[in-house]
Image (tube, rainbow, N blue to C red; front, side):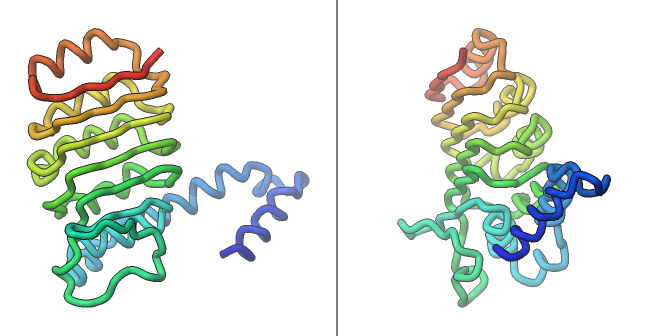
Length: 200
């Protein structure tokens, strides 16, 4: 992978070649490949294993139910019975997860915490999709959304569907502008929610 990274950097250095001038286009394409959903794979190995593979492939980490250690190495995903390892927490800090990959979350039933920090591809549609997943509506207790520049009030409001949400941290989100409206909405819909805001 490092060799591949060095080659792509060299290619992006050739300004005379029009197809290589913008590395962002290349990495955007590659990240889209990493996020592609393989429904056959989900059927074969189960939703937790398939979601683990997706998340780790994109640079995120997972923690399984009953374990304290975070799983971050794709090559060391645990083996054994497919139904043994249930994702309890997701830390997507600096990862390349994006909307097209969120179908991986559909079958997860034990996710209690999600942290989205510095996720450049996360936008309102991701949070809207997340809020519509029935299993997550029941299971998620905590969320942290930090330094995700494409998130606006529209995406945050969609989280009110997570009816068991107890803690929500919102920090450094320049696209979120209606702070008072968010506070009112969550107080009405989720009165027991602890909402922490660090927004300008």
